[in-house]
Amino acid sequence: MRPDANDVIAWAADHVLRTCRLPLLNGPRVYGLLTLAPVQRTLERVARYRAVAVFRRARKRCPAYARFIESQGFSGRISRAGFAGIPETTKQNYVKVYSIEERCNGGVIPRTGVVIDESSGSSGAPNNWVRGNSERAGVRRLLEHALAMRFQDRPVFLINCFALGPWATGMNVSMSLAERCIVKSVGPDAAKLQATLSTFGTGYEYAISGYPPFIKDFLDKTSHDLSPFTLHLLVGGEGITEPLRNRFLDTFASVFSSYGASDLEINMAAETPLSIAVRRLCAADPALSTELFGRVEPPMLFQYNPLDYLVESNVEGELIFTLLRPGYAAPKVRYNLRDVGGTFTHRDLMSLLAKHGVECASLPSGPAFPFLYVAGRSDLTVAFYGAKIFVSDLDAVLATEPTLCRCIHSFQMRVTHDDNLTERLSIDLERVQSEGGVLDVDAARNAIIESLKRINQDFREVSKMFNEGSVTITLHDHGEGPFADRDIRVKHRYIAGEPHPAV
Image (cartoon, rainbow, N blue to C red; front, side, top):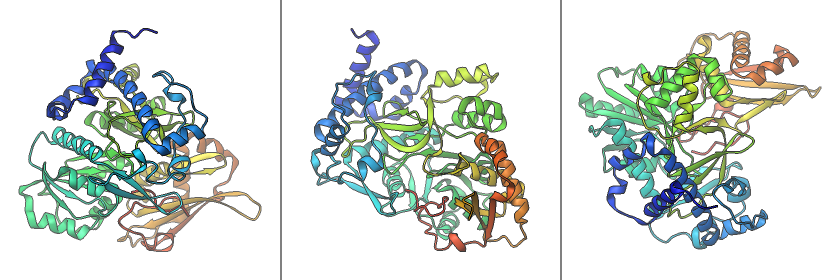
């Protein structure tokens, strides 16, 4: 098939992006031009060319990937249209099978310019991720662009409360933004966060970054008056509900979340005023949320640069990522994170909203980049009578149920079987540290069941198959029972018996 004019333009644009190192191409103004609607179709085409190039380079240069492709019996030539036929890589079939060195180009870890991050694996043993110079430079540019677009070049004092040490997010945020703003890295330490605010006072505009549970803990426990401060919140690591965002907005002038993974890269996608507005519309209109996402409770909704990431979905609804920038020390091609979600182009989502009666012109202006939605981890669910219950489902229940949202700090859930092999859904609830009142466990169970019926269609259907006694609630004091010995540096554990998820 002969290429059309758009194909030639896309090929030429990719060639320029791969070969040109002019500082102009890395500037925020050029990045801003990429967000305009007229160029999105070209970006989509360029992304497909880049994905094929990434595959070919990885197959040629990366020993592990070459062996993986051979082991999967994939030997045919590919085209842009056939890219989805390339086998998926996962933590189990790729990361756990091949050594760290084999997964690097040339079969060795580069001797200079490398930072190695760490995250907890599915076995509980740490996984190590090699970040080369080029990759870290790309992440730095993305974070710098995001900061510039969000704060319009105003001076910002960033207090970094993400976990420090070998974990991916905290150190990368500090290293990437130190030249663009004031940075103090305190880690998830509430006392140091408060001391920093007290020491430097109200004369700065602060951006506080951290995990949502840590920020919620800080707000619940602090006795200081934060109202004189100008505070913004940047969260990541796990999703937030709109009720939790509202709670944060009582203190912070703005609340934005970003999406990334230790396996791949931090800040691959980020919330924008537009994506937040669409999600809040869905939170207020279950029919709209169901039409767009197939669920009453809206998933997290982000936007991403298609020049950097090709995002696909498989038949199970899991997201597949290919990292497109050249220069990764350890390439990732069609990597399945086990996150459930999908994508919309900007034009398609606006069209669907308009068909539902939304006045799109009234929505905040923003980048015309594609949208990425994430409902949760496919491996962070429990299967109860055939219904998949996501961690995000129960999190949404606890955030919206009036009798629970102020007195429950965290939870764990699991499915067990009684002596008759009948399934039971067991939910452990942890009180907030300051809670001294009495919580009616039966009322809590009823509230959880009814709310799950409302937001999870599968649970609503299978609820006809069991009685309320099949759902058990156990209440624990803060830091007791399964919540004892929690490491504040890592995210909460929500599925009983699972190891800590990746940071």
